[in-house]
Each structure stands twice: as C-alpha cells, then as structure tokens.
Amino acid sequence: MSFLDEVPWNDAGLIAVVAQDSKSARVLTVAWMNREALKETVERQEAVYWSRSRKRLWRKGEESGHVQKIVEVRLDCDSDAVLLKVEQVGGIACHTGRESCFFRKLEHGRWVTSDPVLKDPSLIYKK
Amino acid sequence: MSFLDEVPWNDAGLIAVVAQDSKSARVLTVAWMNREALKETVERQEAVYWSRSRKRLWRKGEESGHVQKIVEVRLDCDSDAVLLKVEQVGGIACHTGRESCFFRKLEHGRWVTSDPVLKDPSLIYKK
Image (cartoon, rainbow over all chains, first blue to last red; front, top):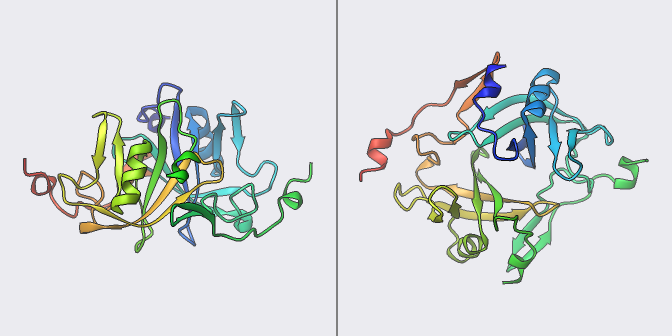
C-alpha cells in the first residue's frame, strides 16, 4: 500500500503514534507502530501497535477487550508521527483501568495521580 | 528537580512529547524533550523542545512567535511520554502555517491534506 511508503520509518522501523478519543478528545496513549502494524490497523480499522517490550504486534484490546476502533488516521508534517482518532471501547485505554494513560499531572514539582480508576485491572485481565 | 528524575529518559536522553491545544483539544505536535528542555519548560511555563535535527534546545515560537504557553503537564503510565496542554499563541503550531502538524488524513489509501493554511509561512518566518 503506497501510503505506507510515505512513512519514513525510523532506524528501528517504527513511528510514534498518538491515540486520541474521538468523543472526549482526551489523549489516551502514545505507542509505536511498524509497517505491518499500520497496515493491519487500516485493514482491520482497529489499532494495532508494535510492542517494543514484547517485540511483537500488539492488537490493542486483545486481552482487555478495550479495542480502539479507528475513526481517523492522520500523519504529521514531517511524517514522524501518526495520530489515531479512535472510539475507545469500554472507555478505558490504560492498563491501570483509567481512561487515559496520562493520568499523572505535574503539580508543584511533583507528579500527582489525578484521574480515577474506572475498573479494577484484576477484573480487566483475568488470566 | 525531583520530577525530572522520575522520567526514564531513553538511550538518547529524550522523551516523546505530545502538545494538545487546551481549547480546541486538537493534537498540535509531537516533539521531543531532554532533561534540560523539560526543566526549562516548567520554569518558563512555555514549551521548550529538543530539536533532534538541529541538536539544540528549541524554544517553540522563538522565530515564529507561536509560543505554546503551558496549561498542564502530564506523564503517562510507563513514563515514556509527556502530554502538554497548551495555549497556542497565534492559533498556529505548524511551520506550514496550519493549526496542527497533523493536517494530512488517510482517505482511501492516500494521505490527503485536509486542513487550511491559516497564515502564509513567508509571513511567519521573515528571516
């Protein structure tokens, strides 16, 4: 697919990806994709990332059910980041059971947890 | 500053940063910070990035005047990305004169420019 050729994959073959909730507009996650992940994301219309720690494709929601359905895919001006607008199934993107992974806010020089846990992770990940 | 010590800077000493407009909620840019850039961002309350191409601190808006005033600084769950909520001076974050750097949208397998130029770049960068 030609749009894949326009992405200047970095030395590790990856591009940074921001996922944003299409309704709440919250930035949910920052993750990475390789060529195969972006191809599959567009084909499935669900977010597929490259897990750098597990070194394999990571179909977001494969364990939690918290799939990210694609609403829009955007590319930035210097082609080094992708923006996904998504419908976040379950309203939870973070493995901690919160809406967004960005749940810590800098306050007076300290990172303070400012967002509630919406669902206990032990109820999300049952394995 | 202790909050800087909690950031697990990558091998290049950097962390990915997403800037989001606090009013329009649009994702404006993805850039990078080193320790000094994050420290200075918090001190000045204006976004300071690390330019990987120019290999120097990049005080966003230093040439264009399109400064990003800090509204909020957030850190994600695995501490590998920072989210800035900003007031984007001039309403233009992109060097192309558009609100956001994410002005291309994937449509039927092609990246299509979907956002208008708000100001001619030749009028922004007068040097």
